[in-house]
Length: 198
Image (cartoon, rainbow, N blue to C red; front, side, top):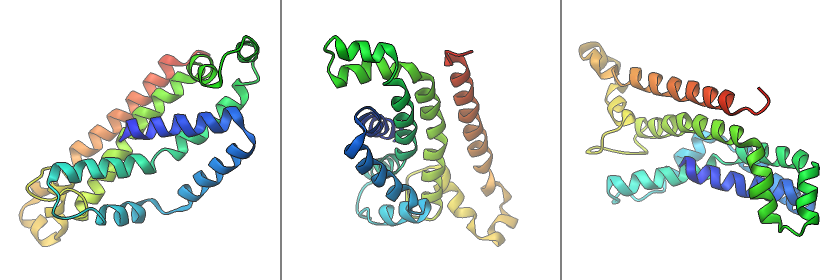
């Protein structure tokens, strides 16, 4: 899901930031429409559309694609704003004057200038994917038994009377918190390590 999100974010953000004009306006309106939709109800509607006859593996891939297709606008907007400033730099103009095509200028000269931001966005997107899948499985709209995920395990803990008798059903909450915090710290650390201005 993160790979889908990063590829779409870099593609649309790169086009909007480098070319600007009409393409930029169209992509920005598309991003604004996607960001204005409430996230969880949209996840729920799309995951409910997945056929219940699919195997757990296909449901998992369907959820991954849904979460990846809805997570790219934030990265695309960040890439666009960075490319708008970087395309005015001397080395980018020199590459254009030497005859480099737009794709080469974007991938070889502009994108490496903010790799640290891309790495941080990738690692910070993993927790949102984990929480998205957990939420959908908890609401019985994602993975279902016999598949095992944290959301499926927490699904059994919905009834408070069951939790009072079997409190260990809440145990999956702890690994979720630990993994989400770990990926957030990893993203911050990678961003700081790869920051060229430090």
